Amino acid sequence: MTAVLRASGVSVRFGGVHALSGLDLEVGEGQLVGLIGPNGAGKTTFVDAITGFARYTGGVELDARDLAGLSPHARARLGLSRTWQSTELFDDLSVRENLSVASRSPAAIDESLALVELEWAQELMPSDLSQGQRKLIGVARAVAMSPRLLCLDEPAAGLDSSESAELGRRLRQLADGGMSMLLIDHDMGLVLSICDQIFVLEFGKLIAAGPPAEVRRDPRVVEAYLGSAAAEVVE
Image (cartoon, rainbow, N blue to C red):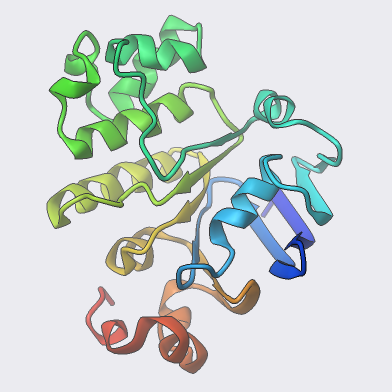
């Protein structure tokens, strides 16, 4: 499988603290890859690093192009898009205007809204939407950039179980349609049910990687993170 993203030995230090230590991670064409771990494990730090918001050592390639030295906006222009833990919509702009910030192509905006089935909301203001719908608009805005890799940082945070399930369905549809994604989330039912591969971090180090069925049974993962919840998530 062709690697859209290849991270090799990525490390991040904040003063004397090793926030991330030598992480190797790949996302293939059309893959939905999960990155999980306890709070402080280094998940968002990794996304900050590959998208240019944190200094790092090691190598990051997008479509085999080395991204060393490139700014966040230059990486975004190459197709590396992300969402943030907070929805970060512009409350004084309509839904459609929020997407136009990311893409000036009306066709791309229409397609992105259609993917999350929120075309009906395009003239509404963000305050008119539920939290789950706002999250989907955040995803749609990132999709409107036509990214090669979409990094999603806790898109299900604050959603109830039905909203999270709906988000998962949409993300799986995007992956099945060929979009490559890296997903960070604490909703294990979501991550384990929709991802193709999962990487698990603890204290900035990789402790497990593989398909969901394999990762959820790894003793190190159960001990470090999943605990009894491992027996409760979807097979």
